[in-house]
Image (cartoon, rainbow, N blue to C red; front, side):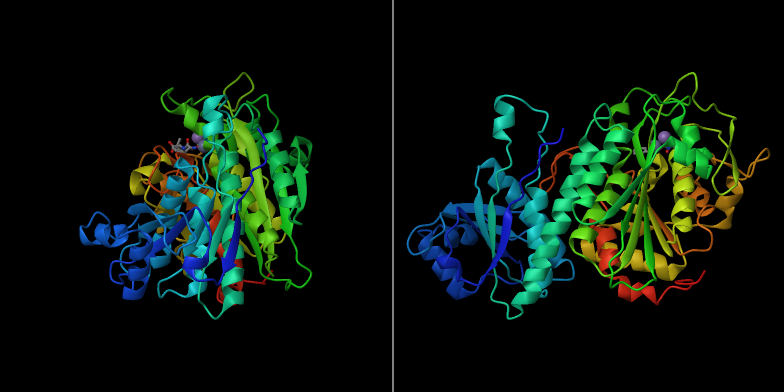
Length: 516
Ligand code: BES
Ligand code: MN
Ligand code: ZN
């Protein structure tokens, strides 16, 4: 379904809170920085004593995501105030602010409030805080009810229309730039969430490619879509081997952001797994939970979302995004366990388990993005159940080398408030995926399943700096959380975009960059 999403207008405003008209005035409160006496007195008076009473009686405590709403009269233009807790002031203040503001956005939506304003405070630089606030409001305001009809559709229409961010900061231009970045990144994340929520009967590889093309070309990114003919020409036997069991034909989208002013190197190469439905193929998955495998293209959606954001922000660095798109289905023509496929790189692979399909399509895509001239690689994939066993839904798994490069990716994640946790790439794992019959097997047994999958991908990365992010546990939220709707999370759009923002810090820092 392709209803266009209307995003709220987020504006920076230097007026005093009392003078701003809004249905809801949001005031973040830190545990170790209670509201100043003057502000408290003002709010207390405007709320007929309700704000002071709630704090006094601890009906409101400044814990993360805690909320207190009350009407305002006397002197303030806003109809109501929401105190929202953000915990203690420390390195994670901006993250908690993002999450708390998302919780407020969910509450505002429930109350059908359309015009909000938020006081940006705290001693994190105002720009970082304002970006986090903008992201929180937009990410929290997202709810995906495109397929509901009747009353339930009406109730869930997107509601937030305007957000005024109030700041006394002197670096207004910085704050405005940061807010713009926040809006672009959050909007791109929400678009990625819509793509991943889409059911597999709608989002076939061909539709995925069309939708992605529309999303990024709107922002000036060049797009090319390869069909099976072209893949055959390039010798992509692994991608075609996965696709051959499906009736829906595969696609591979190639997105290029090439700003005229950017230096020739580095070229950031982003690869995302785009399996629009993973039934397991002949090694078919059990029925329970198989519906969730419509989101096995979340890594691809993250790369598309990041390319959109990078294009919209006109970041001065070259970036290529490649997403191999296919279904993984059983059928008379499907790849069978024991089959041997020849990859585009020339390496041969014995398929022991057709459900280990992600690494097959990514191997060909990683090879291809190197051919296209990428100097620094990152792939994002819902790759292994083993990664979910290792880290749960709390963090994505991060693999990579050299360490300067995986550290850069880790920093980008930290600055975006997305969690990644390092996992190892020991030689032992490469031993586990050696084949008797061919060069590699595609499944390395039960032990260290996330690591052997990463070792498989590594075989297709040449000598380039490369990082692999396994988002099998983080791409989807089974339950609604206080700050996040149920369903796709859009994870890694923010990190990948931030990595492009930070390009100057890693371009010279990692060996091999710019080398042939
Ligand atoms: N798409 C799955 C991994 C997955 C599992 C993603 C749970 C999200 C939630 C992947 O293609 C897969 O099936 N992996 C297998 C590999 C195994 C056969 C070596 C797995 O993890 O079981
Ligand atoms: Mn699979
Ligand atoms: Zn899969």
